[in-house]
Amino acid sequence: MFSCLLPDPNLIAFDVIEIEKTDNLITCLASVTQKVAVCPICMQPSSRIHSGYHRILADLPWAGIPVQFQLYVRRFFCQNDSCECKIFTERIPSVAAPWARRTQRMTEAQQAIVLAVGGSGGTRLCAALAMDGGVDLLLTLIRNTQLPEHEAPRVLGVDDWARRKGQTYGTILVDLEQGCVIDLIPDRTAEGLAQWLKAHPSVEIVSRDRAGAYAEGARQGAPDAIQVADRWHLLKNLTDAVYKALQKHQSAIERELAQTQRQERIAVPEAISDRYTDIASPSEADIARESRAQDAHRLHQQGWTNRAIAMHIGVCPKTVRRYLNTELPQTPLRRSRRRQLLDPYREYILERWNAGCHNSAQLCREIQAQGFSRQYSIVRHFAGTLREKSGLPPRIRSATGKTVRQDPSRRPPTLRMLAHLVGRPQDKLDEKEREYVDRLSTIHPRLQTVVELAKDFATMVRHRQADNLNLWLDKAKSSVLSRFAAGLKRDYPAVFAALSLPWSNELTAYCTSSLRSQSFPLLRTTAKEWSGVWRPEQTPAAVIIAFPLDKSMMIPAPDCLPSDPIVSRYFIGCLPARFSQSCVATFELMGAT
Image (cartoon, rainbow, N blue to C red; front, side):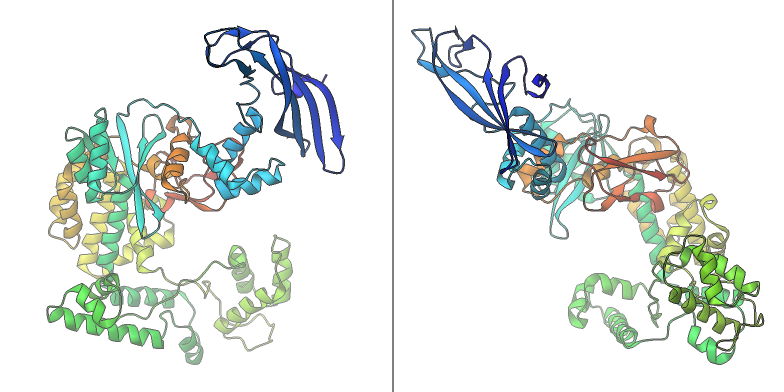
């Protein structure tokens, strides 16, 4: 009856099952039933029994209670006179390895846990599942893992990964056809990649980001291989180039968008309008930033290098480059507004307010019926803002005052947001976003050229129109995006391949985010053992993403999912190292193709 609970019912049998209440432990007395054993040295069978002893083996828990097997195992005489082993113990490999103190099935379960969640997390999870195992034991299981054999890769994805962000980086190599990690390299230099490629001459296509080290490493290690630039990085580089172009006209853009906001809002008394300006008044930090920017421009005109200027004024070289790319005077920083609890109900409140309902308690009751579960003071504070914008005196509930046509807390987009909007497909923008992009073209002729070129390039990348690349480069070389175009021309073969071949680096980035902080040998083992795969042919209108309950991280989506890589490349969630033992969440896609 209980034989189904045994590790191998064909090899061992129950004698007694005891439950010890004090230690919360189930003890099973069992014995090996085979009549003949094989000598591990000469492989000669023997039936002559010498003696026996009990092996103590930990097994998988039953109903959350730890299980311990006291297995009676016999010693045999070796009947081969020439064998150096005279007495041996019978082997039971399907139950437990020699000298092991846990059954094989428990070892496999703990091995799966540590490969999924790591050493420290695996220790806590094993304790919760009544399978106690320390960190040292679990890490030993990783070292003893038999890595799967992979076929020689033909299409290789190359990307960097951070062992310690900002300090130590390595390289991950992924077989894009098989959808699995091939190897890890402890650095991200051209020499390391070239050495690996020389040892694996089967590689015909190398998909990589825009890093020069990987381009040089691929040229040295596989000179005949086709290099493919990652399409997401192409669009990311475009966004950065557009952002730098917008920075040169930051003041004009801010004034134009602020004027647009004021035209849409109601006219309020001057005393109130001064308190609700769209552009923040300069703070002490803004004044100090303006002073540093002026010093940076002055020293740059005198011939100082960016690094020397950074050391002189006490900022990093990146900040100096940002100062030099921006016109003076600097615009005061606008802190981005964080998402608030009332955001899903703001449009309804504005509609009811303009209809004449100025009672914050009534508004709170109405949105509570729609699912709002927070305190009344949040609604009262927002109603106070609306009252002030409407020109109503405090605590007056009459249906008078001016109409509020727009949420007064809404601000115009930042330059970074505008750069993203320019590169997005026009059919993915709402009416307001499309208006912002169109208004950019009216501010300055250079901005009009930037917007047109950015739209053309983004369309060319998304639809892989390689035939239009030369024409676009000719147009861009005399525009503000000339540096971006020059970078594309230096990497022309890889960019052209990205626009003509289906390969990209999305799966490589997906595998990169599964790497955890471990010593390099352990990390290399866990990465190569992982076998999560994105299959384009399995992509429906919504994607099922499986993940264990682990720390949150950014999941890069594959190229076949969202049609807009700039916005939709990452999903918030938890990345699986193995798809077993996972919960499932569904994310709807925005225009999957």
